[in-house]
Length: 359
Image (cartoon, rainbow, N blue to C red; front, side):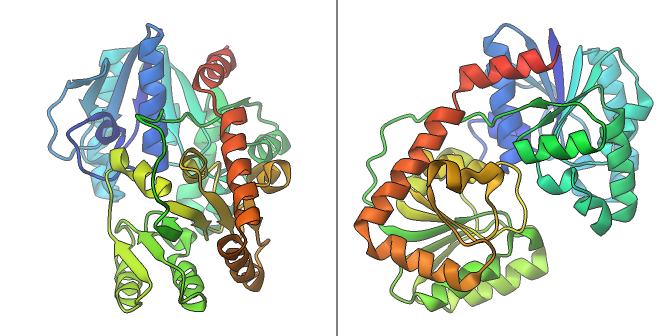
């Protein structure tokens, strides 16, 4: 079979020479593309134009330059439509896949320039519970029409599957794939609290700095790639004025696992997630979890990987203090985090489930 992914920056996650930062969705596209190639399928990734040549192959995955569709600008998107559709028409895949919200889902649904079945993999809870459309009425309406028009849909969690069901839409289950460790984790845990996310309002980076301010003895590290410029500037300025916070703008994804290896506790301050890649990387790195609002599928009750504050900031602060001060509590959480990764994120089993879902 032939698969074609449309993804802004997944080609960067495939390129071993790239030092650009890739997000969780792009990493998942890259990992799934590589697994499909290993199973003997043909895979093409249509990526956004950052000056890369067209047709470069990484680990058997062929990449195509789709133009400047990744900028978010309306004019860039309109200009890229003919180019992207031309590539799809030329490639004639069996499956055309998109992970996460984008109005391109609607464009591909309406255009139907190939025989391909359109596949949507849900990334965030907000994509299926109506929150995205409430915040982005026009783009959200087009996106939701694309979701309904997709031939095949996948959820990343039971909650997302329930939301699909409420809308009368069927779906399969996609469990995040993992990037296998190159070597055992042997970091000295020199960081107490680690925060990693793109600088977006939904990630609420200032709340991590609020936590660091309440725990001045904690060694805190913040990896915060620039996205929302004004928010990033305010976060960077504040972090650099705090003596217990090390602020890093970006780390290439091939080096990011070492950051989780070095941390005792991974901190999540997002309002919504889907199934966070960061939780998986924390488990691979022997870290515990501390979450203010995100508890995907009751993860904290099922595996006890750390502390879930249920939206209460004081519980969030006291939870951090406990994980750092109580060795027994930390060890229990660390083991729970490792256990959920081992039980839920076996690549071979999850790719089998994905292939079954395509049928």
